Picture 1: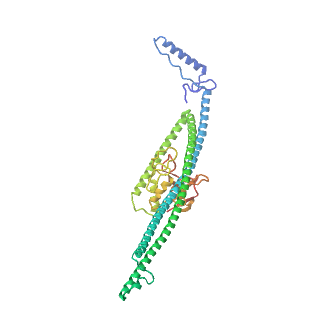
Picture 2: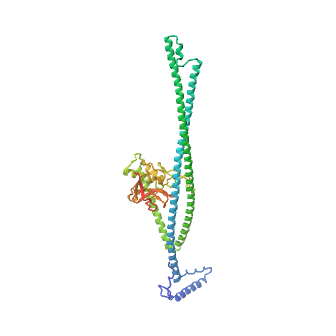
Picture 3: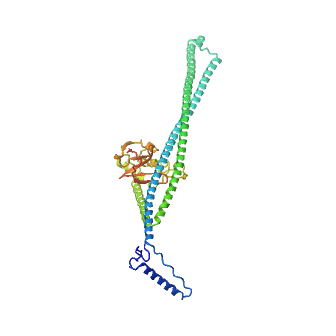
Length: 451
């Protein structure tokens, strides 16, 4: 900073002029007197403003010391900001693991409910079969009763000789023998029908009991799965609220650190310019990243071209899987969102986000990418890990799925490796589908290869 008259040396001489300080001060005093004397003769003249302060060497030294101290504080606060950013990432990872557990429980619940519904349908069908068998018994018994009643009413003797003892001629004997045989067959048919109907009813009763027992078992399993799913979702929502509180505390601390950092930077013009240059660099970097992602998304969409003749294997299939993932760059993250057809609404995240949001979570993006080549993946990332062949990270190829876990917790995140040390992912709530360098923190040492 420059001041009028320049800095003074400790010897009392004015630097650059060689004049002793007392002579310079006397000269200033003469000039001031002359100015004041000249203004007294002018009616209503305004007084001349006093000269700006002339800081001493001590003032300048204190200023330089203060700038240096603030510069050191800037460094310490910047390190604290980096620490808080890392803590935020860890909280997001822990929350993602809780949500994956809840989503897996919901998948189990749906499977149990489907099994219970199928068992209930089998029980209904068994009851219908039992009712039909009962009707068949009633009809067979009625036919036998009709036969017995008719025989009694007509006074027919259907014993061993029966009608034959009353024959009056050989022709009559033949006719009576035929009638006797017909009656016997009719009786056997009626009795056989009744017996079959009874057997069928017994079988139907047994099937109905088995189906009913199976339906009860499946219903109990569905209720157990529902309790587990409800508990998992409640735990995820509780964790989300707890994490939200922690994130809010971290954000408040970060804001406080940022305010202190801004105050330190604003104390010196050079630091403000440095921060402005950094902000400008960040904006340019974000613009360049957005432009690259936009270009990658458009290129991927152009390569896809709406074709239905999707390759199933080989490099063309890998290229299509990657292009389908890249075609969703910029799409918002939605917990539980996304399927083989594209983005969708997800599961309420317990943080008050609108329920009608449409997008992808990490495993939903994989479902969409691989569905384009006819590969159907499980819904949850930890299950997708077991959907293909395991390969070491050192043998990673484009099209492989990479997975992440937080310490000893289960797998909570999946991304698609696209080559050149890059991966595409749907990271977490508040972010969007993006391309980033392959992270090593939390990276599972084996990837999954489907194609």
